[in-house]
Image (cartoon, rainbow, N blue to C red; front, side):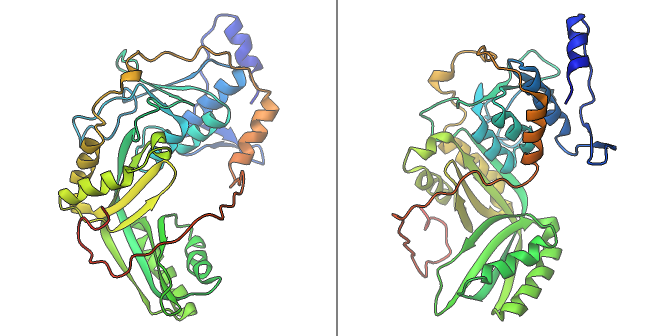
Length: 349
């Protein structure tokens, strides 16, 4: 990323227009960067120029607590941290592409999402959340999910690898993954994929089931994923219980659960997905603005040092591959399994 021509033009008082989604490949051929390329290019230029922030103008006026087309009470957030935005983006909120947010986080570039059609202050994406006390900052929905369960998998090392390597060979992305406790030397492995990927997934599962001599497999393609995200839940208890109880009171059955440090995702019937999204938005009072965020959005004023272009390109190239940044070991964990629960609303709560 050579910025000399750009800096010369800026110094001369000119307005610079750069291609938003073009780059070069290993053979120096001009190519496109794919989805999210324009946002990623803008963040990269902001980093190498040492800009105070990167302003992204789009067709929405900021990041909302959820999709306002489904929940009219959804509120525009004044500020959201990188990790929260990454989780919301992966959970279905499509305002910005994951790669652009990853770059912004890696290079400490504040991103200001604003509307192209109004002067609304927008949303700042920075290292700090909107509220340090609120456990949840947003909710999202992925509408077309399918669940596949491989039944009676032998409980031995490499069994899960056999299942997932067949799927990975077909370039199918998996989302939620749950393996139950082994019973009589066998276990069930459940995972979700996008509905459009289900036919290819079932072919891969059929092959792996035969290799493992598993009991069989089942699938359901009429599901949606509902997620709540918030940096505050990492230090607060009772968030999952509150979410599960609210869904149970609406008669919404939870079919699958996965969690991370700042995200809880549940799988529900697609016919109940919109009601589930409204329910979690209401129970966590996401329509109420946190008291500490009453001030208007301001662009970060801390000096941001310009990066060396060679160093920036090297970091960007490494981010195109899977990077393991660290490995931790926790030897103080315990596993508790409740067996044979009826599949009815409210039991998770």
